[in-house]
Image 1 (cartoon, rainbow, N blue to C red):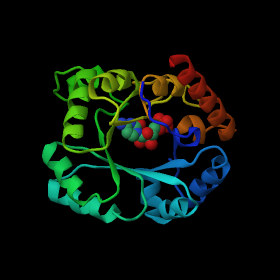
Image 2: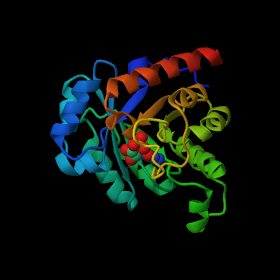
Image 3: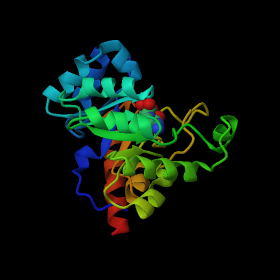
Image 4: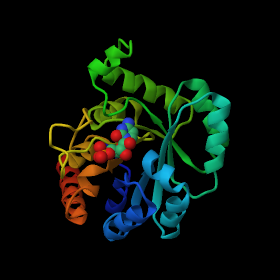
Length: 240
Ligand code: C5P
């Protein structure tokens, strides 16, 4: 497990996967008594650009901007430069050494996370893309490269968190999506494959969990957050 001291209100990053700034702000207002970290991804960014990002930061909360930049190094460098000094806490990039190196040049005080292998991918998806490594080996390989190149951390599933922590140490920030179970995502059509509970993810090494639909599609999002926070607190206690 990791030993970073992180407030319970910062452990869960709520993924604001909604299609308007109004819905996103409503969700933040419902959740902010319990959690202070929010993720803006492609859907919401396309709908509101920086409006919601700036609004969340102005309210004193943290933002993970999950646009997963993947392009030639020069383009990624300039895109990351656009985020510099905006108050965003975390941003995500994909890529090989040259792309990560380019992003590091312009990141300023922004913390960068390298996406390792999407949590919606299983072994068969890697085979279908012509990759022969196991998911776990590929996650570890990419995480090691990212850390060597100066990245602050990685996005990985909770299934790899324990090995990442053991092999790469405590400096690495591990952010874990694919958190289940939760409201309205157990209908057999869920796209996430490498799933884990919030408590288990944190107990085995993740610093933060990213949770979207289990919270945003719940009738009572705050109750789900409370349950997950209880699970996190008791899992950390069980490991100590
Ligand atoms: O609804 P759910 O909890 O599955 O949402 C997970 C969120 O985490 C989504 O916003 C998705 O884009 C994001 N994410 C992910 N896997 C990654 C990186 C980000 O699921 N590797």
